[in-house]
Image 1 (cartoon, rainbow, N blue to C red):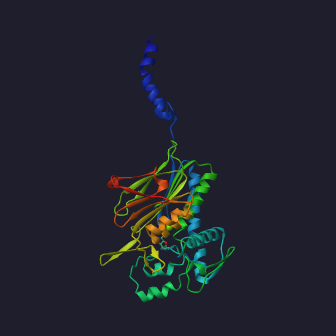
Image 2: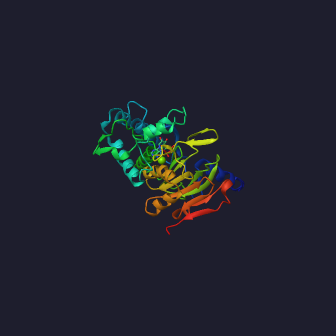
Image 3: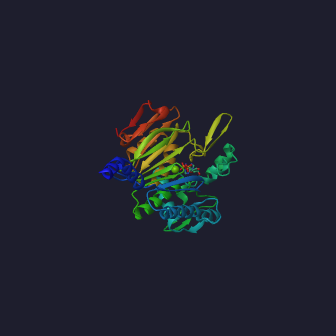
Length: 344
Ligand code: ADP
Ligand code: MG
């Protein structure tokens, strides 16, 4: 009798102990912690989080290093360096795929994306951090070397004109996120969040089955201007705040308008592109930033593979219609009215 009483008396404690030790709740087993990795590559800090074994993420980190070694524009051992150096190359699989993809995005955006803009970006000092404002004549001279349509690609054989330099920096992280997502899916992973320096890929859902919440950075501050719910989507932002310098009170950023050779001044200060293919979203985020709101909205109307969030230099937020249910403003922007771009 006495023993039974004791058991009943300690039952709550015993149940609590079982709960704490096994992580079990009434509704089933609680999720274990995700594997996480951080690595510095492609000039940015990358953070990977996935509900899988450590070995799978280790392979992802190796793949990132491998891709960086192929695409780097400054590493003398990279395939792109070699192409720029000699003017002709037979590319490996990744470089062929990405170059082909990038050229089609250059074409699709009417040259707002131009992967041969590198000599101009370099003249402004964005590759070294030794910033300067090049003279108009210097820019005019450099722009003669910029024209993606002169890249000749025949299968994996590529040649570029004398003086031209290719830089896949505007699309490489997006391509990388696609490769990693593919690897994770093949390994059976159902839930992962890849942050490649602000280029996000949300794989599957959170372990509880709800969509991932992706913060869209406030281009004027350090917080978020909004949150986007996403599943199996890339969310890629190009912003004037990412890399810039100031001179005489004027800001000069790293996204160039190939038509002028100067930092794009389209009235947009941030563009996030959301879609199932990271490489497309990456290229478009850069290109739409150059194109400005009206041309970007028209491109969205003519396309079926992306949605977008735009922030103008006057602080207005625009989203394309497909995001209506999944995007809301946050923080200082919580009461900000969102303009919805529609098909009309
Ligand atoms: P980030 O890589 O900083 O996230 P983006 O994807 O927008 O941003 O790519 C910007 C990079 O692409 C720049 O650092 C520059 O090297 C290159 N770039 C700048 N303007 C253009 C352009 N119009 N077309 C193609 N590449 C560009
Ligand atoms: Mg980009």
